[in-house]
Image (cartoon, rainbow, N blue to C red; front, side, top):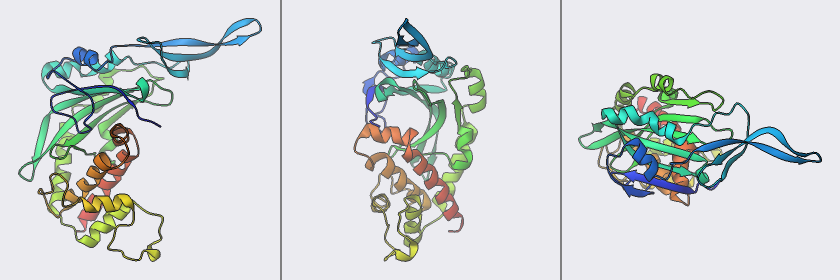
Length: 317
């Protein structure tokens, strides 16, 4: 699937993916909605078939964009509840007005089928005397069949703009998914998700633990081969001290050259961030493809696996 960026805007610093048009800082949610080209709404319209007696309703509905009548989804059921882009942005409003969040980036992917907004939580932490991690809230609002609304917390390492991930054990606690067949209830979602100070505190503890445990070259190669497994049987590997796949080799090569390599050098924190750097900045042929994969696709799952594997291997370091 081509992950074409249709519209995108960012406020403040250039985002990690480097995409979008710069807009003024500290925008309201309504201003960000307009500046990012998302001030349109979705209509759920009945679909018809031609019959001998004339046009007849199919019982299905199409999702149509108001700005240009583009069909975003050709067929959804009667119980499908589209969430308008303004509703998604309004989710952030009280936090932005209270000064807890700051609108950062917003846009649409896949020709408008995926709309998202990213807000910076005004709460970050510093590791190892200079390695800063910021926290963001991501609201993904798909206008397509089979996709749920997704609201999650996502940390970003400032020095290298790597999107990090919470561990598998806490991932479900930091994310809320809402099926379009249910009515979207923002207050229930806020209660379930929270502005996750506790989760960020837990993440800081995990990061500090990884930064306190050192790896050997042999264990590093073993780690990268687990994160990026090959089809080669263990007994057929000629040199166990060499990574076996292209991505494992790339991550191994950037260990000492990645931005921020001076922090916690030789530790599992450095090893984990070699994987996040590889997924966010090296894999894929296009920047927007890397963006989509980092948040919604394969690379997000790779980072979840990378963090949990690093934690397990650090425990015996």
